[in-house]
Image: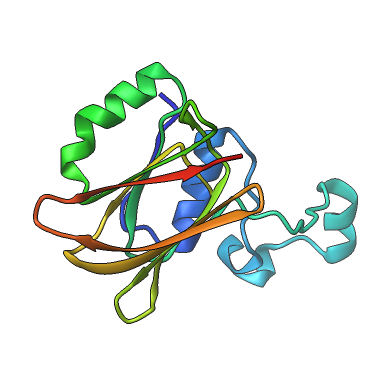
Length: 167
């Protein structure tokens, strides 16, 4: 199963977890490497190490303290997520077309009652479950240029929120 879980991780730890889960290489920030005395001279580092290029691509933006589960691609992942759904207060699904086909690649933002972002994902879906306290939330979801927004109340039994684009 390729579903990723993040449990109260800081943005750096979540980035590392995501990269490891996807099998990607991670370039740690300079401050994580230790004291500057242990680093090779800049001229030697340039010659012997690959150059890290910063790209303007972000897979997700985790808000520290938010726990979520994102996945549901394929019947096995869908079945496993449905079995665990009762443990997640906010359960969102994303679909399009007249046949309710699941979609991924949704830009998702969840805001609490005071307008503070509690979750931001740039590649959500087709199913996203979030651990949130009971209360009022505003959710915005964008897919292929269409944005859906709604106010929801997460109560004691949780909430299923379905977002459907007619594209």
